[in-house]
Image (cartoon, rainbow, N blue to C red; front, side, top):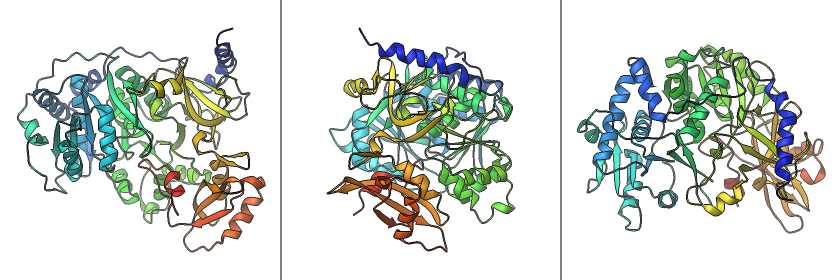
Amino acid sequence: MGKYWLKDFEEDLAKWRPRWESLYDEGVPKNFYYPDYPLKYWFNKWADKHPDKPYLLMGDFQMSYKDANWTARKLANALLDLGVKKGDRVAIMAPNVPQYVLSLQALFKIGAIEVPTNPLYTIPELDLQFTDSGTETVIVMAGFADKAIQIMKNPASPVKRVIVFQVPSAPVEVEKGENIYDFNQLVMGASDAEPDIEVLPTDIARLQYTGGTTGVPKGCVLTNEMIFSQAIRTSTWTSGGFKLIPFDEMRTLCAIPLNHIYGFNANVNICLYTGGSIVLVALPTPDNLLEAIKRHSPNLFAAVPAMIIGLNNHPDIANSDITSLKGIFCGSAPLPVETMKEFERLTGGRILEGYGLSETINILTVNPVFTLRKYGSCGIVWPDTDLVVVDVETGTKVIPRGELGELIARGPQVITEYWQKPEETANAVRDGWFYTGDIVYIDEDGFVFIVDRKKDMILCSGFNVYPRDVDEVLFAHPKILEACTVGVPDPKRGETVKAFVVVKPGQTLTADEIIEHCRKSLAPYKVPTLVEFIDAVPRTSVGKPDRKVLQARK
């Protein structure tokens, strides 16, 4: 009979696609045209078209497209002089500073593959990623250089050279030695000609590692054309078909780490398509975010709930003008409705909740700007993207609208492979469909509601408990500021539900009160049996609650 279920997938899409496409904002096509150019073409285009326009802004620092392109060309040639070739892997290990973006543009010019790297990783974590990717060159901010240098000294490591840049406001003494290079010296000594390297749209541009700090790292293989397909759609959708933010006025607030696919796509990628400006924030505290908004007036802000909550509660927010923010893109975790309404009141802008993964270059769904928004949803199906909900057990049965299952995806932004991981690829990508591991339901309008990660599901006495179900109930308590639910071992139930709770300042609350609150809204097997009060919910580098850290607490 063959794989009969693939026909079922197509029938499901044909039935429901017209409904979700009818809700696209005016000016957002159902299908996009994707020009057949590599990423470097677009940066060169804008440097030629408006050379004096600001490209990078940070505090008092400002760099034009012309100067950024000059620096990127010189760095690209310096890398070639060091022996870096097209297809070589180069790690960038830094927070959101100008040198990160300049290094990225240099790699695009010569067809080297970026390995975005979290500078806060430990040496074993970095070594694992560098070894898996075959990274030979590391471009690193001085404050983190020691880790890269130590790894390079290990004969078993593929790392051959470390290029170090200083930040003037925080100079750091760096070890000197063979194969340790100074970023500025390399740039100043190199040619400023555009490198004569042919880069094709099908060439790999980035290995986006996923999986956090535990387990086997997996590099998502992202090509030039995959990345640019998202640049066009992200720019068009989040601007409301360029009615919320005009095409030539795009100015992004870059607070999400650039080493994360979200920070990259919502800033560097958008500005590749629109020729916009990037306002960089290295440490996204509420103070720093507010200062950047007031100083540089960005109009598009890719955020996570913690950033929005922090700004809403900033002591100076009532006296600050943040109305330049027109589009606010929020992801990584659900945003409480009252928090959303308050931030929209303060900005006059529009919050768009969305959802995606490293494997999908950040986006599969986003709420429309103007037509319809449903609270609790992460939006409708993205243009040129196919989504189907299937059963968790076999992944072959289409689940009816409104019922829970695993989300699978297909589209030009979706990976076809993990870097040199054929078994992992075969598990995740089947018959052209990527299995996300996320438990969701899709309603009849095409709005997606995420319930949880399949791997985060808690199995209590044979019942499935999704942590987000419990989290939503906890968030509804008027005295609770933050909450996060995890499963912990239990000798009788297999696992039991434990809630970690942050109480609002000035409030008091007991574990019994929390449990009683949950009993009113949850089935008995979902009610937490354990409650622990903490000062703050630990988060990953992009603001997601870090359930693994909480599960490891004794």
